[in-house]
Image (cartoon, rainbow, N blue to C red; front, side):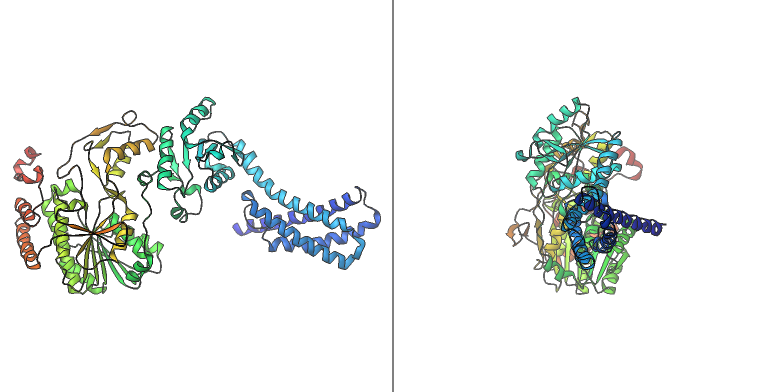
Length: 632
């Protein structure tokens, strides 16, 4: 069916061109002879018409005027029409002069070129005019009133696409731009109504005119951090939901501009600058090698898989115990990287034999260890599981890497490992000490420490978004609680960069910027949804949960900061633990875990991490089975 439609379209377009060529030449003769062609010139006109068809239709075909959607024509198409018309007219002139000599007056050639060019261009632009003006006006009802913030190329492209596609159901009321010189200018007939600071006033003014602004789209894909934050503040002041056209990197992943419009994410509010990557160094460390990623189905692990796959390893081994999520990332990677050998291996890092088998089977040369239990309140209630997974699981991996002479081992740590007040942070600090204790190994062992990751599984941002969508309340533990944040992509980029910098047993700390108050994060998300905090959506304080503290830290007292050549990566050097002492401590931990002695494990953790201050919840003994209800 599609081939039949295409054939009909091909025939219709060429028929249209033929009619234009013949009518243009006839009009040229009429104009030359004052609308009364002498009888003697009628045979000349017939011959010239045949020559014109034979000359111009092939020229139009070579120029590709039959291809493309006429409703999207622009200046580039106009130039192509001019070039094709000129080439066709030159061929026509040469052929006609050869056949008919001077029987055709010279003015005919000029008139014919001009009329043919105007007719072809006019036909194409009439299609666009019909789509944008006539159909657009007819389907105006039921559209969403829209302001486009940004009168540059992105704004112009977005406006043109909306105009040419009525099914998008947008009515562009006007444009905003922070350049005062663009005030009262117009793009495609749509006026620049003012700057971003005028957004609230413009929204109110349009409301009085019965043209309600229901959404603002920020079309500034190259905006700096400061410009984006100012634009978002202006949109919030208008109390209208806003969306955003993402940066150039995101735009390149899509084909249609309107399809790339997304809700404003909290990463846009934080406005962190792009990470500088030394891709050549990363590629040389990954390309053609066997790479193992533990926790591959999690937030950090799955993004590590995506980023590592870009650098063309020989084998990518995705290791996780979560079957369903591992299946999903396996299918995604196979779809995006069909030529890459991907091995999805189900297993648990607590199983030393399974870990050793996978590393040995695939001759792994680099390990990215992202598998861990990470939720602070849950680990406070599951001390044994946290120690078994985060501590013994890391020990199993480290030993297997050493035994199989893996070249590089990188462990993902956490800012909660600094002066920990919870079990999760303490177990991650022990994991850092385990990695650091392997300094004499042939394997290059390093750790990377960073804070909270935006949008990761179970993180605060998705929770706030769900609460806002449900109408509130948004729950915050404490009005002064602060956390460091970075995006998943930024964290993984820096992890990959750090993996090329390790010189054995180092702890890298990523630049997390300034800590953010969680309540400010909540208020920004509420405003970005077009609502007002504490008026439309309640913010409710619930109190700090077990193991939580108001402020997170990134260094431990006694550690010394050492800069690196990368502005966002630093090295912290601090005291470690002797390998013999660590092995003895781990043996005792295994005994306590076998006996399921939670209080003994807590005390044992504090012996190795003296800065650990257990929470009141963890410090009190667990009840017997009959007393559980009373305990809670």
